[in-house]
Amino acid sequence: MDDVVILGGGVVGLASALALAREGLQVRVLERGEPGCGASHGNCGTITPSHAPPLTMPGVLGHA
Image (cartoon, rainbow, N blue to C red; front, side, top):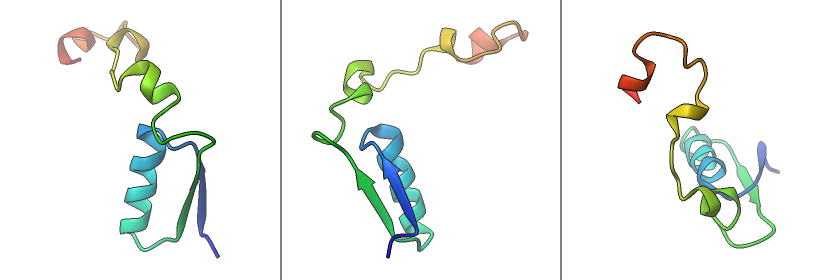
């Protein structure tokens, strides 16, 4: 029996699965295509500071 089911085998889903498995949980990842074929592929694993609110805090862009 699985402790956790993760929907989506992209970067976040697989990283979450790995972290949970390392903690000893039984994890199942459900992905309808190939791993990384969805949003992770479309975003190419980028982190975009302009999409990480709140941008109004002083120094946020300098830390990104």
